Structures are given as C-alpha cells and as structure tokens.
Image (cartoon, rainbow, N blue to C red; front, top):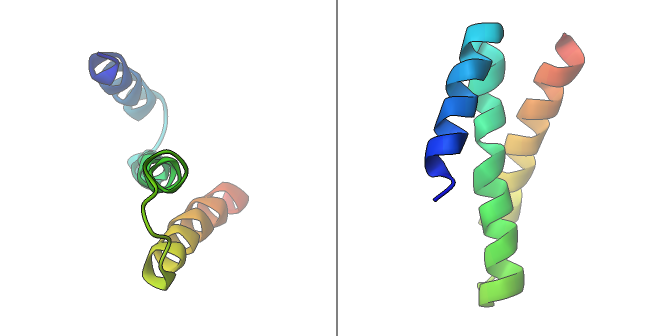
Length: 67
C-alpha cells in the first residue's frame, strides 16, 4: 500500500540530491526489516546478519559525515 508513496519519495529525493547519497540510504530499509523480523517474527539474529547491518549503517553514517 505504501510502496507507491515510497517510490515517489525516492524519485523526488533523486531529483534533489546526489544518487551516491540516496542509494545507500535506501538500504536502511533492509536493516529495519531485519530488526522487525527479529522482534515480531522471532527470526534468528546471527552474526552475519549483525555484521551486514553494521556495514550498511556504517556506510550510511560515513556518507552523512562526509558531506
């Protein structure tokens, strides 16, 4: 239901900012999905999932600091 709204928001962001900032920021949704899966669906929280989430967050933070 909200996917079309999110898509329009991403397109708007792409017109107002650099793609190199918007692309990695979109991947935060994957981290949030993994966190929600752990809390609401009882999925396991393995080392690779934690490591991947930390890499994504580190990349987005690095881009945020670099600007």
